[in-house]
Length: 308
Ligand code: HMG
Ligand code: MG
Image 1 (cartoon, rainbow, N blue to C red):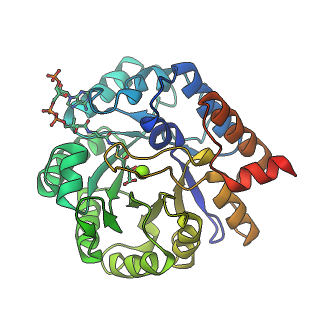
Image 2: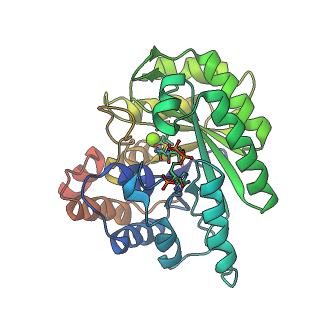
């Protein structure tokens, strides 16, 4: 893609909805994804194959994947924490092998840059988590799936405080070596500021090419859009976001949603970048899902656009 194209990975249906308290129907999840793809999002995280005891909201991911009226050239990655999750996904893919293209061709695996967060999120140390994920990745690659890696708590950990960028660099290098095509740097707690983002990227790019990195910023301190611009100014061209700023993290107390897709679309297109997004359809989707969830629309740009 051209150097002025920023690929937005829409994580609302996963990172956004995983944290909602009320039950969200499969129909609503499917309609959200179908609206997002109509608005021009080409990578939409569709859910997770994690333990339903840990994250009940993601229990219906198979039904969501099966129910979407898929569009060509849209990818629908799903989170997979372990071999059991991968086996469930593969069973679904094999039982629907008449589908062309397949229901999904991509998984996302996740680990952390702090021991306490790793334990809270997946009940494993970082080393054990990397061992598990190496096996998951090997098998997924054999099955022809793409594998994306996430690192949580890249700026601070809710339990341990500031994260050393060298730790993030080391974990990123391991994810790259195991075969992740891209590594998304997660500011789970939303404490990063542009200066710490730049510093982190400078450290991580000692081991991983900038073209293999993505930025994933939660907006708890209101800095996420600024952090996106800092990441893009450092050369990152892939950014994760949630329509209407949906989301949070069940294992990061107090964390709010992801940066809003509407806000970064506004900031990036205003700076001359292309995103491939239809602003009107995106903004309408943000308003629609907020009302469906009886939730405030957390996108400032989305609310302003609708008011003008
Ligand atoms: P555990 O309890 O240690 O697992 O959890 P276990 O292997 O001991 O199994 C316990 C039970 O879970 C068993 O069932 C398993 O079958 C079942 P039981 O015998 O008790 O009935 N189980 C599963 N069921 C369905 N799918 C599976 C699965 N695995 C085990 N895949 C585990 C370990 C990893 C499973 C658990 O900790 C888990 O599911 N964690 C996921 C947490 C999660 O989804 N967090 C949110 C996503 S990450 C995130 O949001 C951060 C990110 O946005 C970036 C950022 O912002 O930082 C990506
Ligand atoms: Mg997240």
